[in-house]
Amino acid sequence: MSAAQGSRREAAQKIVIDESICGQRIDNFLALRLKGVPRSRIYRLLRRGEVRVNRGRVRQHYRLAAGDVVRVPPVWRVETRSPTAPSRERRMAIERAILHEDDGLIVLNKPAGWAVHGGSGVDFGIIECLRAARPRAGRMELVHRIDRDTSGCLLVAKRRSVLVALHEALRHERMRKRYFALVRGDFGSRRRRCESPLLRTERGTGERVVRVHAGGKPSMTEFVPLRSSAIASLVAAHPRTGRTHQIRVHAVDLHAPLAGDEKYGDREFNRLMRSYGLKRLFLHAASIAVRTAEGRMAFEAPLPPELAAVLESLGLDVPVIGA
Image (cartoon, rainbow, N blue to C red; front, side, top):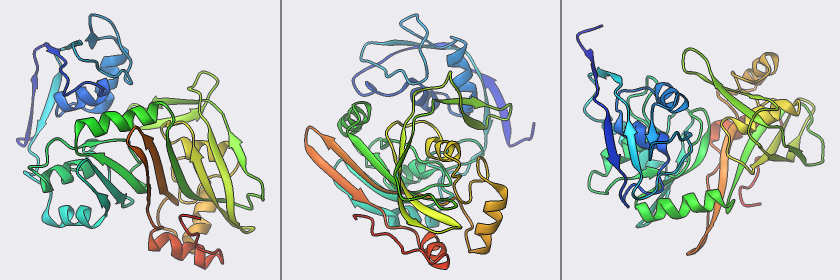
């Protein structure tokens, strides 16, 4: 172990949940409490029942309630010497990505290649950069997540009440997301739906892998063709559930893998797409609409120039987001 890092074993903790934490998922709560502990380790603690809520086991998606007593087991954590703050350039890039901001919410057009939170070799994700840029703004929290390689609409709550309201909308399917994806071949003219259940597993390295499996969680994605050619087609993907890598795995299940998908995609197709200028996963969260007790909100993120250029090189029109 290098001089820049060490390890120590934490004592077991019992934490009583108050109103300020009410509604937070147990895995996110533990990630904040156990700095330096990889998420893969946190998920193992939950699976093995080493974390207890009110003396019982819970799963990673359990949402904490006021008065819950959480037992956090003793764990070894690695302590590393991290940078004291994200760079000024990083913070400025995040500020430029803001599409909308009000008293309770920030909406970002997340750049591809940026993790939404730190961990797994990433010192600072988008949420850490925002907190560093707004030190007096209170505890900002991610409303949802987007894969590191995906660009587009990302919601960040500035107030706990806003976070709770948006999580409620998510749970009751009052949040609608629309993605643009480029898929292999001619998708045809009809919309298609995939309802294959998805099972998430982790490799020894902690890498998440998702596959279609009868024992997986119910999942559903609708795909609507927008622009087609013999080589590739642009589709709008509407995920009705929020599983990890859902759009990417469902696209493969429909024999239409995403362009630039190095994990689940078609290697030959990806090589062909590189010749058309594609250097990343072609998946963009184009819009998001939410209904809460306060009314309806809708936000749009324009297609990044590098993806628009790929469509133009294929002879496909760039779509209008609101259309």
